[in-house]
Image (tube, rainbow, N blue to C red):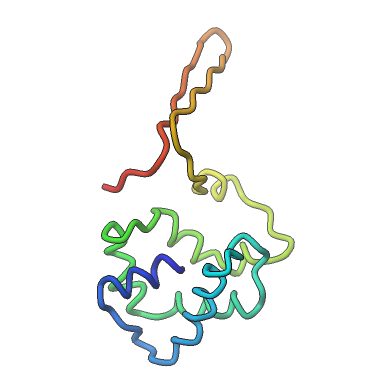
Length: 129
């Protein structure tokens, strides 16, 4: 959500619901403090849900995500905020497949399936379309 908020600023797009500035501050303060990997508080979940419900974020900012390096899985995980913010959350296979871990450099992984040898390279980073 913080990336979408930065994108709004960059694209000079405002909220449709003018009362969302405090929700935006909650999200941005978490990121500023480096606490985005901590368990989500009820206040943060409420803020994210309120922001995600804003028409301008979904219709004007999200489609232009390539202009401010929004990762492709953002919509998926924001749509699932009720499920993923639950303290008992366990990722589904789809969650794992769509998750992203920042990598740098070149990582090589070799493995064998039956009689076929595989060599996979991760060259790090993300390239937009």
